[in-house]
Amino acid sequence: MAKTPQKALKPLGIKKLSGTELKFMDVIWENPQGISSEDIYARFSQALGTKTTILHRIVNKGMLTVKQNGRHYIYTPKFTKQEYMQAFFKDKLKREFGMTAFEEVAAAFCGRSVLRPDESERVQQLLVDLTNG
Image 1 (cartoon, rainbow, N blue to C red):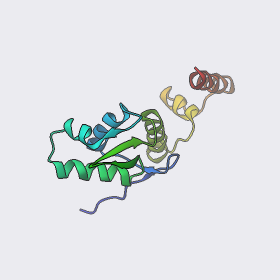
Image 2: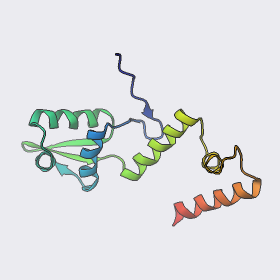
Image 3: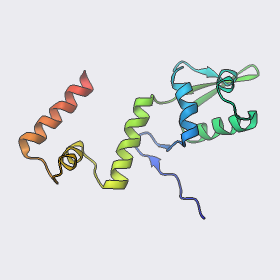
Image 4: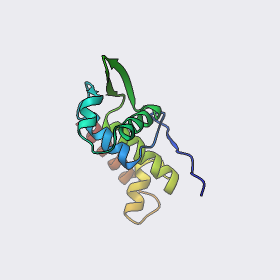
């Protein structure tokens, strides 16, 4: 069975993370200033080589910057978890449902194909309020 190519999350120019990679990123996101490889390794039970491979994959997907510090590496996230999740859900909505605007999602959630103009304006204002709040 052939692997399907990973789609890039276009707004960030990165590739989707696997479940295990997300668990590693959760630890890294808890340390936005950077975290050492030693500290990451201590949080997971996989073999050392497996943990190293997972971190390399995350770096290759464009999620992290890496700097060597003595015998260890410091991993720093390029994006916040919120930025990643936002790009992930936007990409998923577009690929799976053909929706690109929140108004389309709101209409579909209500069992309709479109919103009335006044409803669309309220949804747009809600998004403005949420992003500014």
